[in-house]
Amino acid sequence: MKRFFNNKIIRFKFFDIELEGNINEPMDKEIFLFNSYENFQIEFLIKNIKKYNSNYFIDIGANSGIYSLIVRNKFQKIIIKSFEPVNKTIIKFRKNLKLNKKLKNIKIYKFGLSNKNSQLLMRAKNKRWLYSI
Image: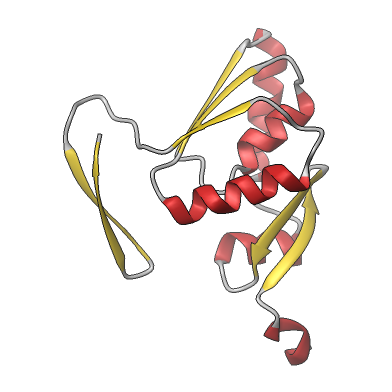
């Protein structure tokens, strides 16, 4: 088992999409080991997109693109706009998009969204970034 986890990069399926992740990242580990990550929220989202026949999906804080990819897989005609300010996670999002070649037309924007113009100091894993929003 230890030898298996020495390779940090993992590939797995979740909600019928292919994903690449890092076993040391909590979200990836939870999906890989338990096939679970915000399942209730994702099911609620899918149910409401169907119920209201939504034309748009705005993914704010898209991270590695899980929500955008799941929505695209379920709803081919919906317009998806994904916003993520952290370059490392955008790279991961793009890798996940490439793993799912049939999923097209997800527009990724490299900035955060807010209700006001300001600069924001963001922190993740002991790294800091300054963003204008």
